[in-house]
Image (tube, rainbow, N blue to C red; front, top):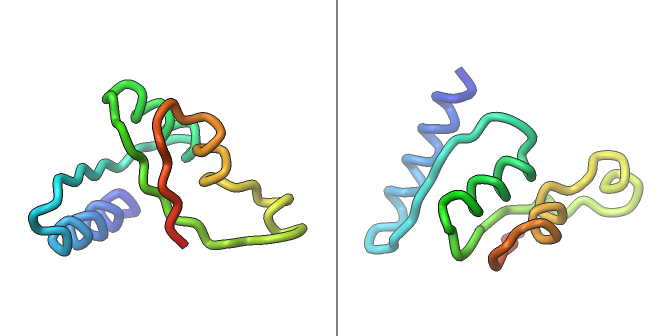
Length: 81
């Protein structure tokens, strides 16, 4: 069910980006590690990732996928809030 919801959300995003070369994919595993792995394997030159803007103790306890991707990725990362 989660996979189909993710695919539907990504299809909506793609439909809004007419004329832009965009690739979407649903991965399974630890988010930051899978994003970085996939980007490297596919020679991706830009990762665009959203952030919820958590701060303080909430960020410390939950970690930050965007921050881990920024620190680990071989390519540029654009973070959108």
